[in-house]
Length: 505
Ligand SMILES: [Mg+2]
Image 1: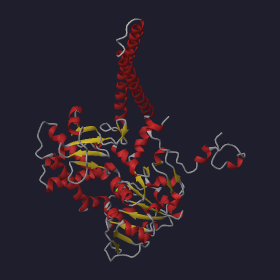
Image 2 (image 1 turned 90 degrees about the horizontal axis):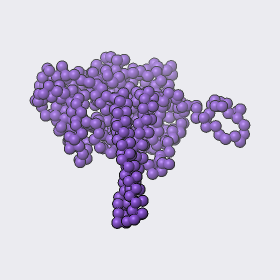
Image 3 (image 1 turned 120 degrees about the horizontal axis):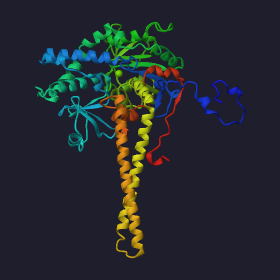
Image 4 (image 1 turned 30 degrees about the horizontal axis):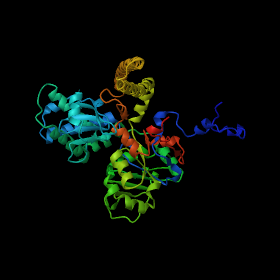
């Protein structure tokens, strides 16, 4: 019998602990709303919880954002950079781009890597690059990212449209057998510069602010989540790269008037930092600026006060003025590099990564559970068959060395060798069959997740580069901030016991 969470009085003494009953309170029943744990995180030890804004407390509608970015970028390419009107008729497939892809600016290819940086699936325009060519290009060199490098890393949801546009434009020209009038690098750099400009010059923000419900999802569970954390004595802070006016508009849309105790969104937070310039916030020493009610700087603060808004700053001053040490701060963000990796490497903030794609990934995982299970079985079978083939091959070779023998021993040896040879043949046939089934099943299953790229967190039988980074840098990860609502504010998030391959039974 399963015990409900409040039935413990009925339990006798000295009975074995019923864990099913104890695990129930505070664990959401829907796995899509779960918080997943890479490293133990004891919320009782966390004194302050900080939040990024864009794509973290403010979940954007990705199709609407893609459409807006593409429109703004095309405008700038055509009007300011002399690109032809024909660009408007390019067919863009939004399904083509997922997070965690890389762009080869020299070849115009887009590819997905596994966590060891091996290049897996690879496309030129919307057409797959043949395996042979892919190996020639990427089989022997390390893939490096960074400014001035040949490869660009698509790691934020903001950056998806630039890769979509690159692929679409290449396909548009080369699919018709024409040569593009620009190099791939020039095209990509111009697209990226145009998108950056559209973000910087407020043309996109103006449109978002004018139609907030179209672009940002107002999550009814967000205000009670923040309230619950505050009620448990945690300090909350907002740390965003967005500037004052935009932050003000988005946050008041999300929170103002949602709960009777909080008239304005400011009341949820003990400190608000805008224009934070992450990741430089975590590595640099820019001073904080106190802003007045209109967002104008009015000097450098000595302390951080509730109800005030600050701009810029750096992690050391923040910890000093907030009287907090890094291990007591949990920072929640969506950007692996800017929010998570830097805060971990330069400071020791604990990290929660928001991955809004997870809800769909988990949903699809559940729908295709049987196929995914079968894929796992087939992968295990391949490993086992490989080992068996090696064993029998070694046997055949060792027996061959005994060929000098004559008489009855030679007959026995010959027949043993023959048997081993037959086994090798049978196992090889079985291996071929298994690999065929594996490849076919992986193909059809992956297509349900994404027709071009398969699963976000996997590449072939490894974690994807994105999946690997999530594992390396995020202490916990989840689809939305309000998933914390189902858990206790003193929850001990425990990681599954980490087992290395040699320790598995
Ligand atoms: Mg963000």
